[in-house]
Image 1 (cartoon, rainbow, N blue to C red):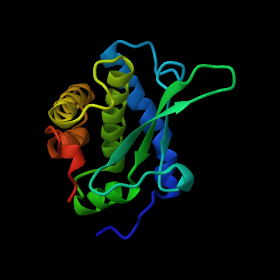
Image 2 (cartoon, rainbow, N blue to C red; image 1 turned 180 degrees about the vertical axis):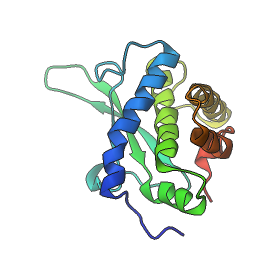
Image 3 (cartoon, rainbow, N blue to C red; image 1 turned 60 degrees about the vertical axis):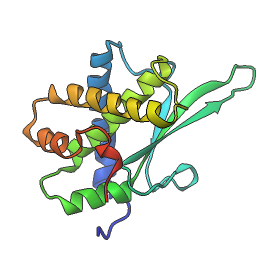
Image 4 (tube, rainbow, N blue to C red; image 1 turned 90 degrees about the vertical axis):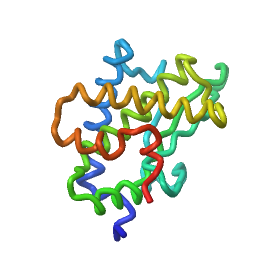
Length: 172
């Protein structure tokens, strides 16, 4: 088991660039001009963000949906990606063929695909049962299609390990 439960400063410093790459390739796939906060409002938290962090066993990230209200404005939907530092680090610790950057691009891209599909009403965030499983499979397919275009050998390792439908949710 991985002794660390939180990303270190170097890893935290890498996250904005990896998220930016994920936004870029996801926007290209969906033919979006960009991931603007006006249209796709979301934030990313890690184990260091104690007040807003959701911890869950067996997954690489948790996607949550919220409603924000500003005085005098209509409620607005936004999403939070809670990275599961402990689970991600444990996965990297168990398999030295994986690298942090590629695994994070995979996780970010997967969650961004969910966000786009929810915002554009392809699927409901509140889907249950078979509909939810089907959506997870579809998101995995799209994530694979997006990331295969990167043509990075190290990314192929991530795709082989977690690319099958549902595999991102199973770590143990």
